[in-house]
Picture 1 (cartoon, rainbow, N blue to C red):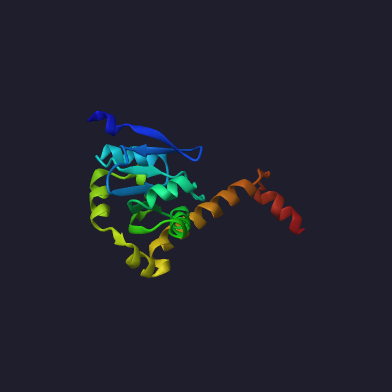
Picture 2 (cartoon, rainbow, N blue to C red):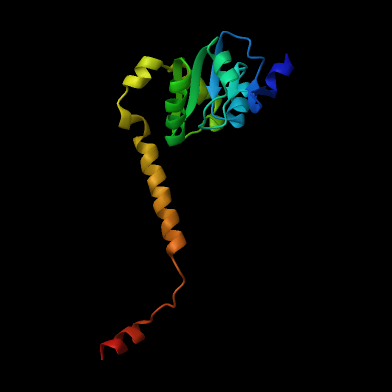
Length: 171
């Protein structure tokens, strides 16, 4: 059914969410956003909802999710970990699926997806994992990028000094 392979919009308490499929299966996969829903549809996963980042979910969406087994599939970055922390306050999570460091869900190849999906964590094992090990590389990359960006924004074009002008200042 090709209709299930197109993202749709579903509204809960006047907030719009992108969904893949009809959300009538027992298990729902919660992802960060629209691009993630579209990517999972490419891989034939139709029971998804994109929650549009970190936010408190509408009451009707929480009530709906409480009737389902919820897996969350997140990017292995700071935002993904923030979303996990927010979701665990609001709903019961069965499994946590996390991408490889520095790879977003929407950028996964099918081979990466198949490997990741078979290595999903239970909620308890994800909570018990050593905290720095999952995002250490990501944090290092983020900090490096921020350092590079700040250097670029603070650099100004200055006239180059010639060796002759340097030697004349010594006299």
